[in-house]
Length: 517
Image 1 (tube, one colour):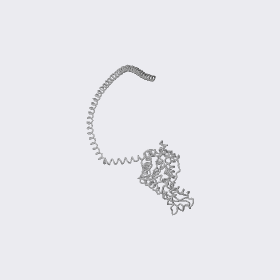
Image 2: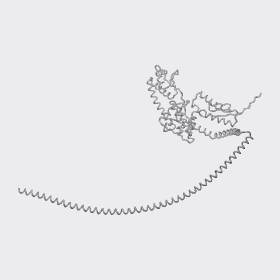
Image 3: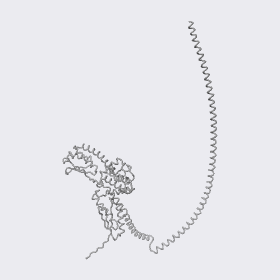
């Protein structure tokens, strides 16, 4: 029991001693930390003082430098201001001297003006005296000559007109001969070279198309029960079917070649298929129309490829392809347009113009004919609108507007296309013309010549390509005959529309006839 008590006392004593030792150790540790913190603060204060002194010294040096620079700049500014002030003083002196000189000049001009006014008054007085003397002399001349001023002027002008008429005729003849020596040979060489380098077959389209049949029995099947098949074909295709006694053939009639071509392909497909009834007719017509649209685009692309023309809108290509199924006086319009493009390109090359632009203008000059049967307006107006819609070159638009003389050509290319258009249209066999139009054109040509004073007779020859005029020798002399030919040429150009050129030949002859009895 005593041992336990002793043990407890020892434990308690050890615990108390441990607490005391721990307390003393912490106290000693806190004293050392306080000393260390005090040393750090002292060192920091010392370092701060040192840094402060360094910065103050550096700031003083910088302030001193800035002050020196500012003083130097002030001195420079003062020097510049002084120089500027000197320049201004000098300029002011110059202005004063110039002002004085201007004042002196103004006084001198005023003096001269006064002198001029005095001289003008003197001149006016002299002119009045001269006019009075002139009137007296004119009155005296009127009395001596027996003519008034107006009558004398009329006689002089009449005499001058007679003399000038002969001189003008001689001048026209001289200039025409001079032009023929230079321009005629060059023009002939150019056109002949163009025609030799490009020659294309022109397919002459008619208003009817013949479809061959495998047998006569097929006519009855095409007509159908009570004519229902033929009515359906005519209704969907828009063409007239002519079934007559022609063996194993039917005729399609329409002014629209595209409609005739679609109808022909549709009927041939029906014959091959063998099933001929209204629903099948409509089905094959729709199919043929789609295929024909693709073929139209192919024709347009082929023309562009042949001419080497690029960057053309797809809708414009389709319009171009439709020209294959359009005709003008029996001439295929697409083939005609390609010919014009080739000829214009050749002539542009010879003259140093833009060849591709000339070809493009030639190809699209009749593009309005692709839609002139669908819309109101001439093919010239429609073509120009189409070209503007697809943002074609201004030269191309002007070419379309001017190739028939509706507007003035604005470029050499426009004139070349007009020449190529006339050349392609006037080529023998290119176009068909009705007898009525042919006779009317010859009649108009002869009437133009007969309206000229001094003309005795006029004859249109070579299908209207030449006009021979016989004049009265007692009224028209050799020089005046050249003026007559020139006047007839101008009237033909102003009043008639014709392809190609018309040669005007004036004949003056004197015949002495006696009869021996």
